[in-house]
Length: 159
Image: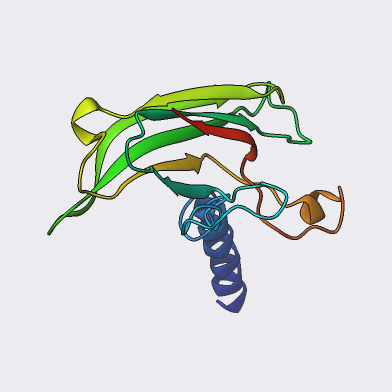
């Protein structure tokens, strides 16, 4: 009976481990976009980044590049762009959303237009970028940088 119990325990443990892949808390990249972080000195975002629109601004053009060492053709990077308005009593309410997919490390300029009714709004309006994943250069053996990197900001231009 002891051998049957040990064998059952081993099989049950193996099934539990196999079923835990890609589920919380073992989902790949889950720490990437837990909370918005400011850009670093070298203009890297984490997996979540938020920028406040200035008054009298109708939109922005933001140039971003993933700068990933891995093959983006096989594993594309997807970013979700949301325009959020801080509504009294409701918090941040999404008012517009779009996505962009990178399959190469080339710079992409994203054109984000603010809805007309929010151009001179008294509400705080922000744009939030959330990537499908981050990478840590140290974990890949690229260098000793231990930050979780999302996208590299080349330029931001309000209009």
